[in-house]
Image (cartoon, rainbow, N blue to C red):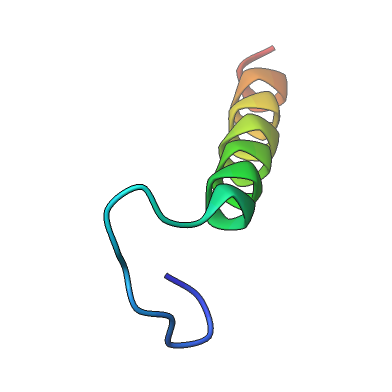
Length: 35
């Protein structure tokens, strides 16, 4: 979690979107390294 947020079930569309963007960027970086 970011900014000391409290995790709750089904919480945080924003967090999930942020996580998805982060993982996507991470994956792209890894793929580029492999080529």
